[in-house]
Amino acid sequence: MPVFPLNKLVGELSELGYSCRPGAWSDINAGLQPYFERWLKNRDGFVTMERGSIDYIGIEEVVRMGPFYNVYFLVASGSLADGDSNAHNLVDAIPYYRLRGGKPANLGWSGGVLSTLLAKDAELSAELAKNIMKDEVKRINVRARDYCCVIETGAWDPAGIASVFGIAERIGVHARKLMKQVHFGENADV
Image (tube, rainbow, N blue to C red; front, side, top):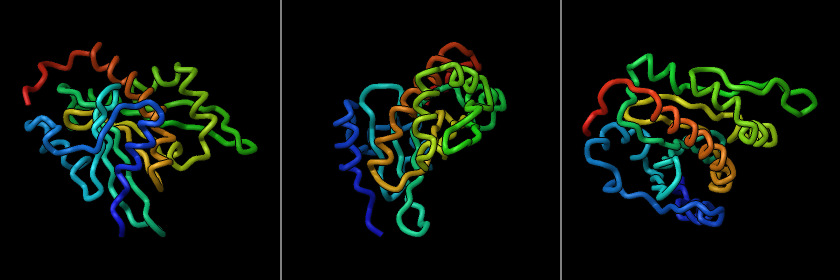
């Protein structure tokens, strides 16, 4: 299978006004590398975001009737831990909806505290409703992991990832604000 066209994704995100570049393993703090390896050290590479709420975009190929990619938008945080139920109660979120005539009804978010903030964001809700039939939007979910919040989805190509990046960025903004407001203990020095 061909390697994911990372430069094409960087070009499409740049055209949308996002500052990014193909990622290098040295972009990541050495202490975080073992934790981010699962999301970013895949054959297809990753993107380093230079501004905004998303720090990295990891790409992992999954073979399903042609090339399909798992996409991981990472929001770094020194206070989150996968094994901490409080972290999951804080940031885990998944959209729910019911389709009527191809249009979403009862669109909302379930999960932790972040889901409440996402549900109150009218712009995010409008964007989700408009794009709910896209695979990239249907598959979105947010999870607390070690030293990061991962916004996960799936996509067929760079254009699909670029089309959902604005939604992921908006989720990342809310996640960052929430993580700054909550004190779990001491940030780990990694």
